[in-house]
Image (cartoon, rainbow, N blue to C red; front, side, top):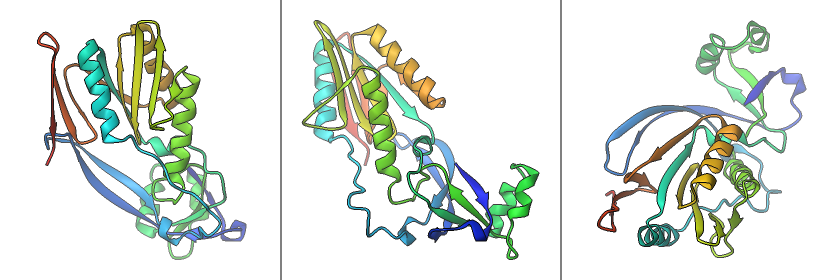
Length: 238
């Protein structure tokens, strides 16, 4: 994610960072987990030369359309969640970050002893970012480019109408994938392709969570299916 540097090695901007705690809940509001996230102070970046840092997310209309197709054709639905997704994307420019004394003291308990030599007089530490840590201006765009490349390598095609919809149609076999940042919702009747995608994602990103069945949450939507009746109910949280 990053590596420590001495102050005289710094040849670009230095940004701060903060530690945030956040609870994650599903579409019904039920508590799932507590996340601790080190967030870069991207608001302090010099970004005048960065012309476009936008990152697409799937249109809700696209999700509804895919769920409608899945219901009509009785497709299997699987959800994949890539853990710490942004950190899979390499940083493409030099950004240095100052880690506060309190956070540095915690890092020193879990990092190599050699890191102690990089502690500054005030107890803080300077690091150079190797990965697109959350909070940097370009992190979302770098991650989206990475996951898009992965899905294309797995044999999917990208929709011209929604850049976060991917698909593969082979005669009667159909596979659709909606992408929302680090969440992927897959609908398919091609079991071999479904397994291939899951294996490919696991190999590329190591830590992914997979959920399947007739009761799922995606993009703030609670999706409940009754496949025997050919019905799908969608509730929006809040």
